Amino acid sequence: MKIDFEKASFKDFENMEGQDIYATASQFEKYLNFLRANDHLNYRIESLSPVGPEMNLILPGENQPAWCVCLVSNDYLGFSQHAKVKAAVIKGAEMFGAGSGASPAIGGYFIYHRQLEKKIAEFYKRKDAILYTTGYTANSATLQCLLHKEDLAILDMGVHASVYEGCLATNVKTFLHNNLEMLELILKNAQTRYRTKMVVVDGVYSQDGDLAHLDRIAELAHRYGACLAVDDAHGIGVVGDTGRGVIEMYDLFDQVDIITGTFSKALGNIGGYVIAKSEIINYLKFQSKQHLFSTTATPAIMGVLKAIDLIDEEPEWRAKLWENINYLKSGLTGLGLNVGPTASAVIPVKVGDIPQTLEAGRLLLKSAVYTNPIMYPAVSKKNARIRMNVMATHTKEHLDKVLNAFEAVDKKLHISGRYL
Image (cartoon, rainbow, N blue to C red; front, side, top):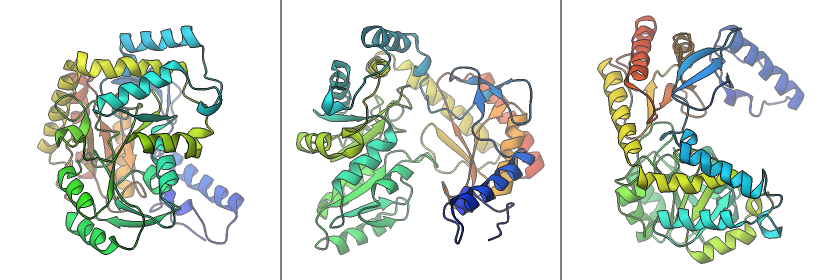
């Protein structure tokens, strides 16, 4: 099976017909070498510095590290480097050590886990939560536990990969992104055919940075007897009057059946959570395999306790983030670049062609601007883009450097004026 590397993506190597894993890996290695030869392998770049608005990177093909403006981090509020958060992490290590030593049911459940469950639930005006070691497993493990062959997951096509993985053992129907007419048709047809029906959406979508029409989605789901699950990983700390995400924006705290999210973005740490009614949470604690059989989060997660407090105590970080979002977005659209419907700290520049997207990533990196070239299967084949994540700690000088770099890229690749 011959693959045209010029037009290929990682998806082409997932399950190669007639080739065992060694043959597949060998072909994929050739593809990686092709990308390297063209300076298009802008992934897994090693950093010598902490997460921040600038990072000291070992760039592909370079011997000396270089400082670049960083637009790849989800540390939206800069809390991974906040002095009070770091102090809480240090305190956690001093009190409890470096690890937790066991899974939650057999000795790995500590006071800081209980405190964090309580705090994140109360943050969303609820009572009960469960922790997972990553945001990815908060989605995949929960859905895998709750939905089976008699049930139906109804997914917005733009949901995160973790949601799709969590639904592999159940029936799945997808609707076009934010297409409420299509969602309603699926709900109508499914009313009497399945045991549990669950609509699953993101609050903020990770590739376009746009928002779910959550008020109308909640009304439709409940009208037709379905549960509603919302992953607001990119919304917490960013969206809403007090940073409580898209759920706060629509005032739907009591209308969402299952809330999922992560500590790895605006809260500057690692781990995931699920918030729901107490009976669902208790069921997950003893039936969700990835929770039950995984060692719990380390004491470093005590930093999240402080980060949650800081969302309310220091709202100036969110204000600065939105100042930066609006400045960069305005500058990019002023250059004629297509940023789509983004309404968050995720800002894409849509290119549409995989080779040109990879070349744009290379040129930006040469200009000391570190971004993510995103291609299929993360987005459709015709919707490749450069994705950026804005941080509160970016300065205007950082963002001007980004805009100047995009202007230079556009002169070479003519990516402005593209509306896909």
